[in-house]
Length: 272
Image (cartoon, rainbow, N blue to C red):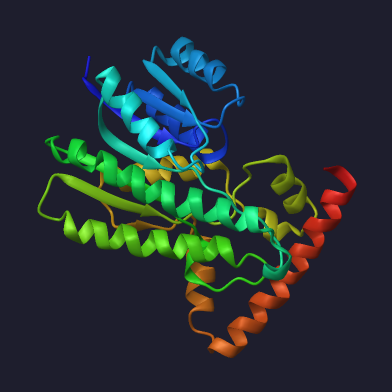
């Protein structure tokens, strides 16, 4: 049995859960991290039963000041050696910036930026000690554009994009490969499913399942790709948007995401 582990944050649901399943199928030893009270232990047990995978769990709120260090301390005290680090945990939402609460803004920055950077910093010496190691950072297609009513989330993912590419360049002469994954819309929770169901056939066709994105992400990581944008329609949309004049692009995005914000607000008032 390998002495190495794959560490995945945000592993109890959505893309993180599908990444864990895909890795378990490959018989990788897993360190799964998520918020408390997300039934992470039940998920870990199912992976052990279904795939005979060795799975350890650590429950913490990565928005907390000490959480990255607490995670690293747990890993080192247990004697685990991480050779694949998947920074997946993230937080977003649809609000006008003015209406976003102080706590929400702080949470996005603490989780999407601070936790990703500090966890990477803490585990980098361990990763570099491996003959071959991988870092996968989950960004977003949103990082490529200014999106009204989601201002903090795309900005945080733009940070992750630049951080990942810079880190990859610095580590080019080591055995550590850094891959940035920029998914588009995914069906990761009930609210997103309700939103997509309320749109037209095209919008539904453009929304990916997390297991499909997970497979594309892992394939790109093992091939040591710099950036992967899963889904040909996402790549086509980005190609078209990037060729629009900035003023027109801003108007198009404002129109799309204002409607999305109002639709989301209506769905939440009815069902959530």
